[in-house]
Amino acid sequence: MTGPDTPPPPRLPEPGEARTNLPLAPTDQPPQLRADAARNRTLLLDAASRLLSGCGAADLTMESVAAAAGVGKGTVFRRFGDRAGLLIALLDHREKQFQAAFLSGPPPLGPDAPAAERLHAFGPATLRHESDHHPLILASRSDPLRNYSVPALHLRINHIAMLLRQANVPGDPELLAHTLLASIDTALVHHLTTERGMSLERLEEAWHHLVTSLGATT
Image 1: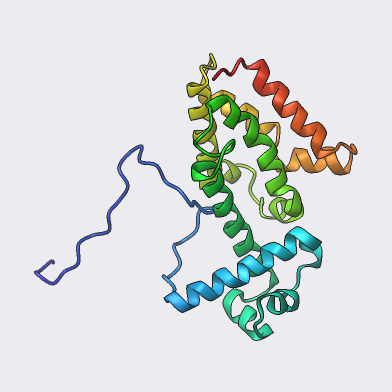
Image 2: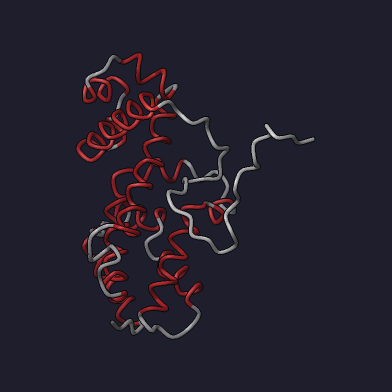
């Protein structure tokens, strides 16, 4: 039953409406943090992100994050629970940063560049974005079928399909987007770099070759 003091129901997105800042996996929405708590969380995640780029996930500790952020170790534990919680939150934080880069950042990855240039830039940017934490991403893939329902992947697919249309690439843009992203899938890249000894530069060149072969034009 509703009355004059009943709050309106939450607004749902319209069909086809763009969504950004999507999480790595479908999760329940956490309670909204107070402004100061949200700032502290961002401070900790930014510190962890800098450390991750420098030392990799294996050497990232609660203690090192606390020291880099200038807070006590207990603050990190209260915010994330344990190291696993910190790493999952960090992956989501970095994914949102990556989304911002290709949705609204500077060229050639962002919107102020021709579609073909953005396509060429997307592969190397993704490879570099994920290169620091392959083991963590792979560990989070407990259900292979569920991997395809991850909202962040949907956003990447839709983004690449849009660029393919804008670049006048013939064929089915959604299927081509899946094919392109499959070539830089985390598991494949981890195998090629660790087991086959391939460099990221070689994989980047392969991405450029694929985009060029598709006939992307400005």
